[in-house]
Amino acid sequence: MLAEPERSESVHARRSAGESTNDPAMTFVVEVEGQKLRVPIECPHRKGRLNHGYFRGNRIVCPLHYSVFDLRTGKCLKGPADDDLVITSVNN
Image (cartoon, rainbow, N blue to C red; front, side):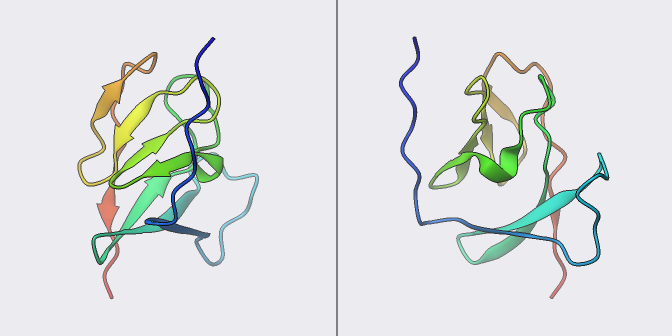
C-alpha cells in the first residue's frame, strides 16, 4: 500500500469565485513561487478531487490514487494517470 504524502503549506488553494461545486470543469487557484495558476479540480485518471490533494513544492498529489503532477506545467510525473493537467495562468 502507498504511504500517504504529507500536506505542505507552500501552495495555497482556494475555490474560484462564481463557480458551482457541481460544475465538472471547475478549477481552483494555487500560488506557486509567486505565480497564480488555475488548476482543474478533477484528476484525469478517476476524477479524484485535486483541491483536496497533497501539495509538495511545485507538485500536487491526487488523494485518490496518488498521481503526481507538476503545477507549473501540468505534466503527469507519476501515474496511474496517463493524461496531463491543463494549467493556466491567472491574470492579476
